[in-house]
Length: 203
Image (cartoon, rainbow, N blue to C red):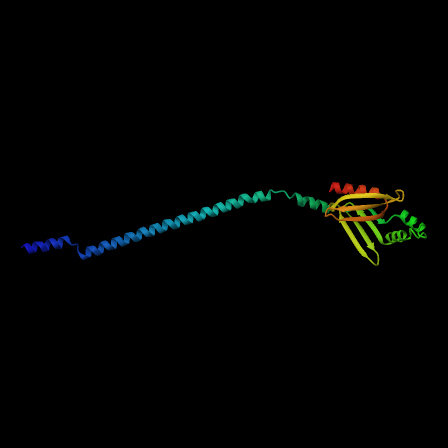
């Protein structure tokens, strides 16, 4: 009888094989459910973060667009206005007639002969043009053909000097890059100097 009681207690204390399998199945199912819930929560948080990032980016782009549109194009408008202004010629012609006459009179003298030849050459082949935007020097000599155009905005300073008792004069143009150009035998040199200075200060 004692042996039967021991067998009964042993059988009662040890769980059955079916119960152990059922418990293991329930634990496995519970773990899988928790894993799927945590993965769903993580994916939901990631999607919310992505949506929030996109929304902030779109808001920043929309906020910066009006600011860029509100910037005034002052330089563009000034350049366009300068291009629309028509170019008006102030003076156009060759060198001084008074210098040419004096050179022809003094040509027979040996001392003034080289200067007379240079003056005749300038009168024949060099012409000047002064507008409200630029000055143009055209050399049509068969040995040295050249055209120089200088915008007034590139001129730093103008200096002139009278010649032939003030009948004509010479001009030196100082550019902003440090170079200079000499114009010899100009008629109305004082009027041309005033015109260029007026154009420089109004640009």
